[in-house]
Image 1: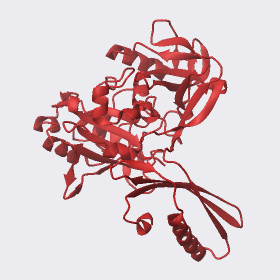
Image 2: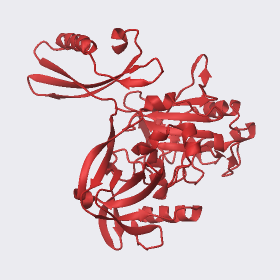
Image 3: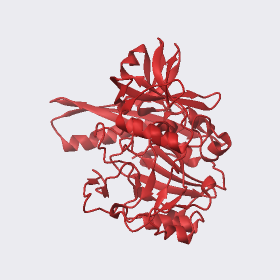
Image 4: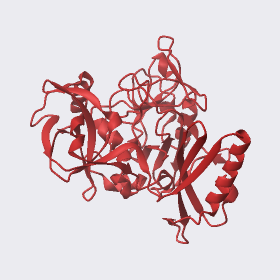
Length: 423
């Protein structure tokens, strides 16, 4: 509908909304943001002249009247600014001191595994020089968190609900990770977290031409498929004259926590957002991974912006301003909490593990996973494309050595960005 009414001036829009209804009337609220492209190529937010909105309201009203002759429909446009709130994520600025648990000393494989075991057992003992360190955050400290990630932990023999958080130091490009007692949310002011850089801006960002970047653009609730695209040598990879794309699933079995929520930070959750690297290919005779290799995207290593950002590498992939946004830190937070073994893999169904998930709109059937990116039956297609791009060798994409990991040819130049599409 937007395309029908746009003029020659380069413009772009975001529209979201909600509705409420009683037995006589339905209220439809639409939130619209608009940007125009300047001659210099930058996108600037502007106020609308409402012409497009009026045409849209008229058309929607006409369609609804044909559907129901006895109901009144009221349509309201809320004209807003470009930065949109992040689903579930919030910024907490403290008005009182808060005691927290900080995640420390997670710089090696053994530490990662130890923290993972502790979080899985949900039983933790704090020490001044260990992985879980007691600390206090002073008044005016601001942290980012998502209450959907709350989990019950027994810390020092006391059971409470805790929420993982990230403290972002924008000036020094550093971040710290910790656990806040859910009861201490009252010690500060909560506000919805916003995105400084849109998903579209990230997709259009001028990346390092030496880098190959896979993008998985996902719905925030992960109920539907994500779109996987590839940028190589600064250009979108083509497939029969069109941008290469695949439908993948970034939703887990959700056996832990609330199955109705997209939780990403703890083991067996959905795939966290963030920047990964393609470390190599693995193969197993386990039926649920099929007859094809799967791709290792974490290498059991921290992301390049864990605690201290590798700015030179970071800005090869995304703009520096992204560091201030919550979404980029999900993978780092998950790593700090001992989550690892992220993969891109096949969709085969194991007779001993038959549970599947069907996407509600696209009706795609996937084998439910532990939170890896699931390619359906297209992993061979993806491996072939990566071979043609020089990311994997022929031996790697035909890897059939059980649990043998073959490193990719150039992991320092091959990245995966998992990001939710704004609503």
